[in-house]
Image (cartoon, rainbow, N blue to C red; front, side, top):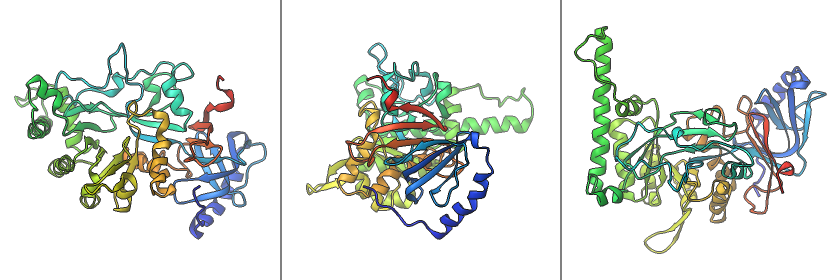
Length: 423
């Protein structure tokens, strides 16, 4: 069980100052969660908490003695429950197949496909009881996922951040494009076709070549704008590949790279150094513990999973998430759904806890950390005033496999209630 932390004087003062504002709200606009144990993922854990929700946002959160609930507010009795931020999976393939026996996240006709958009492959229909993948994720407290292209391509395409509500991809999009997905050390598919890349050198060359070409494309665009005429001889023909990668070059979107070995991890770091990536996160990165100091120094994020433990060269067990966190690396935990079903995100984090990661850190690895990785920490990932009211309600410790999710909110509205689900 996660231990309660002491409320700092500054936080307590802020909560007390918020009380008059809360009292002034129209009662019919307020939903109040009262009496639950609240794990905010923002450094504050409250045994007898109050969360006030207005217009889909967190209006206030604090101890019962510090927050006044307006008369007439809709009350959710939270006694005996544990409330966390909605869980976030920062590496997922949810809803991406198979469709007619074909997985929809790998376009293997070309190793360089930055122009592809993952939103065009997601099967969103029936985000409800008849779409079990999405429903099962909600039933385990997952409210947001980063949907990514697969890893058969050196540059696979543009990822998206989705909230698991609504009936279409457009309803679900929280951010698109959220980053550019790449993969290193995965040369086997194209080697079997006898085309580059047949080596790791070839894969990195193709990535660098594509990025340089996008950079030159952008310079040509800039010269055109400076000339101020569409008749300029320097007008580049529209190129969707280069347009997509220009977002990386111009630091408009970050990069996420599938890697495993230590040498590929350092190659990814060199690419980031060379092209000045806005932010670099690494998926899987099983050997990251070997270069943890370099990752921490460079501020590179590691998204661990579905393999949560490994063994070093001496046969000693390494808890990947816990080890990296202790070395100063930001760690997210993910399922890589459908490798591990999306519903098991908290179980993945529970494995890290079993092997020594602090529960507080494990919770952050599936809430506020991925929110930061995705550049959405101002919206999601913790229970703080002003943020989206995305909440998961558990009947016990979230990392106890026997605990059940009883309710899930997205944007302040119940999108899952266990007692109303078909038996």
